[in-house]
Amino acid sequence: MADKTRYSDEELAEFKEIILMKLEKARHDFEMLKAALNHSDDNDISDTSPTFKVLEEGAAVYSKEETGRLAQRQEKFIQHLESALIRIQNKTYGICRETGKLIAKERLRAVPHATLSIDAKMNQK
Image 1 (cartoon, helix red, strand yellow):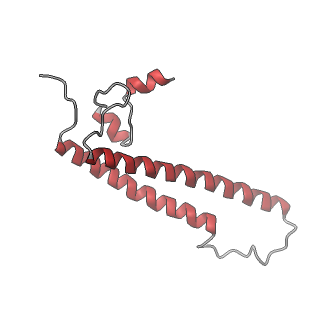
Image 2 (tube, rainbow, N blue to C red):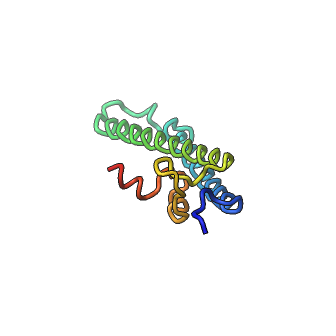
Image 3 (cartoon, rainbow, N blue to C red):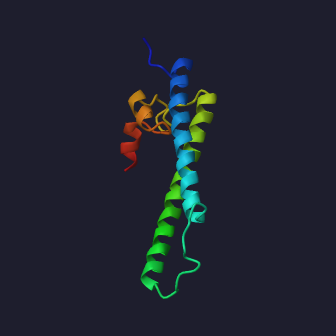
């Protein structure tokens, strides 16, 4: 039997379900990070507290920067998952962009937005 060149519609449907679940969670996490950045769910007294708490303000700034970086990473993850859904629709999902061979199912289940097989990923380093 010849090597498969693409995943079947049933296999693509399985991957789509995995991606949709991850996408829903990623969007929820992103919204939580955005809310933390905007203090939309905050009952803080920062607008009435004394301004001489320099160390606390420094920690707050660092925390906000870290939350901003996490939000950026989450947004990028969401974009990768959305791109994977497009590849499923185009029936090119699971094909390594370097080798043109199928990416192992186990890898796609663990990293559903992967575009490189393990071999291609190892050769990048």
